[in-house]
Image (cartoon, rainbow, N blue to C red; front, side, top):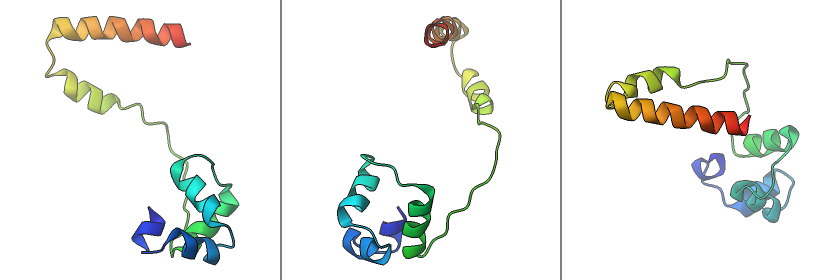
Length: 91
């Protein structure tokens, strides 16, 4: 996203970040993940910076509760039972 917003090709970004176009392609397609150091270098080369912050996990409870108001209570009960079984199976 940063590369596209900066209007850069993969080749230009790779050159600026001292990496290869193949590596940039692999990162963008999700075939590989850059280290934090490499990600920072790529973002800086595109004119952006990496910022991180600690945050509590988003459980989506507020959105879930709001949307449940529009669901038939019987359907909601079936869905809830199914989800509990799915989560129990995973955990």
